[in-house]
Amino acid sequence: MSASPSPYLTQESEYNLSEDVVTKITEMAASFPEKNSALIPALHLIQDQFGWVPPPTIKQLAQLLKTTPNKIYGVLTFYTMFNLKPVGKYHIQICRNVSCSLLGAKHIIDYLTKKLHIQVGETTADGKFTLTLVECLGACGMAPVMMINDKYYENLDEKKVDQILKTLK
Amino acid sequence: MANQNILLNFDRNGANHTLENYLKRKGYSTLSEKIPNMKPEQVLDEVKKSGIRGRGGAGFPAGIKWSFLPKDSDKPVYLICNGDEGEPGTFKDRVILEENPHMLIEGMILAAYAINAKHCYIYIRGEYGFALQRVQQAVDEAYRAGYLGKKLTGANYSCDITVHKGAGAYVVGDETGLMNSIEGKKGQTRNKPPFPAVEGLYQCPTIINNVETLASVPWIIDHGGAAYHSIGTEKSSGTKLLSISGHVRKPGVYEVDLGYPFMDFLNKDCGGVIGNRKLKAVIPGGSSTPVLRPEDCEKITIDYESIAEAGSSLGSGAILIIAEGSCMVKTLEVLTHFYHHESCGQCTPCREGTGWLHKIVKRIEAGQGKMEDLDLLTSITKHIAFHTICPLGDAACGPVDSFVKKFKDEFIEHIKTGGCPFGGKFVRFQERV
Image (cartoon, rainbow over all chains, first blue to last red; front, side, top):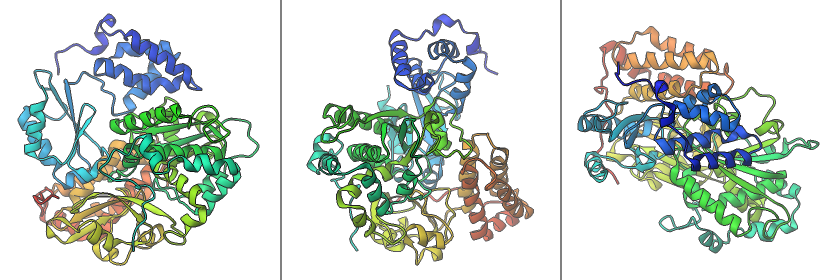
């Protein structure tokens, strides 16, 4: 088991929504027929601020949207794009679905685990890279494909992976 | 036979996403020239006449869907564009969203006019960051030019569009799952009835269509429903975007007239199978559609009826090509993992069953399968399909049943030899175009 404390035990003051995020969420909530429609866009904003969705922010969000933390937590855990724990500076998400598999996704996954010395789901010790497997990214014609943060990298092979990693400082 | 370019009417290497470029292609002319002389019912009639069927996968005629809206409701009507393209193998809507977003916006404005919707949502899957950016830019441009907002340029009605970013869930591609997602809930699907046309987004009458369907509307209204209906076949009218991937020499997105011969498309347009290998299997309409053997594909044409007759479905138009030398059990293992991962957990048969399917296929691939497993797989699918709220359960069964039926020998070989004859790997192809 990991020795790091559960995020639930972290001091809330470390994770305050920025003023900008609060303003945007409030505006969005007012723009929909129902406030709750702003929930998913709001979670995206929170993730943009912290790189993940820290549990203490859920309480703050619940107050803004007049809902309960439990309801938010249900939504948060339903969607795969929200990170429930911190990820590295570069979040590498490799497609493991059919078109990518047919064209060597497994090979790219193995290559990256070896190169970064981490298993799938782990983050490098320096906090730079996190490796995750994802389902179809909708770029099947350019398989194999991975996404790093919000950018797609297509037609991958080992050489290309090397080049891409070199550009990520 | 020359295929028409209705949706891909631009140079694929240029900057086509701007308003300026779209106007050069006579964009928004349908809105500013035809609509002032047309009543909403006439727009609806043309779409009905065109016979266009929903391009998301189910193939339900769009005009008929629109006519399900209650006539006597005093609630607002919503229009949603489903851009949650998640069906494995599908990447055709992405081309419209990224390269031709104004055509989609014009289509939505026209559709909104026909069904009297004042507010529209474009829901785009969260992974499509670039598409989201392009569509938002296009929406902003359209507002500035007066095509969106109060009292539209050239027309006497108002229309607003909100772009909504998804967050990663295949099941949200289902109509009611998507509505729940816009409402800020888990993207689980709703029981029908009530159908969305009666009670959809925010419990109001709602029409939801795929990106490609809505982007076809400007052409249909401009040229007339009859002109659109004259393209393609009697029951499958118009053009269709196909996204072809897998072991094919020239993968990508193509637009063809429905009724186009499949083998011509594969060999002439897409350059055939890579590595000069023999064709082993084709999944013709996205991962949920039953797999076909090469001999099933010889005579099929790309339209709803012909592929249905061959025992599969045109689905979203996502064609997956699998070459000789690939392990079908491994391929099915990848697919069953996907459905298990994406099952939303709402209905027991799907939540439990997709996991069992994956476990069994995985053990066959690992050489630990038993002969009884083949019957077990088909008995599980019998208990999932049509016993769930949404079609995800059915979707998971299509590949399993068809793979086991059409490639039974390969499954048996895995079981009898206690291992994967292909070494548990996919072929690696060096040759790429």
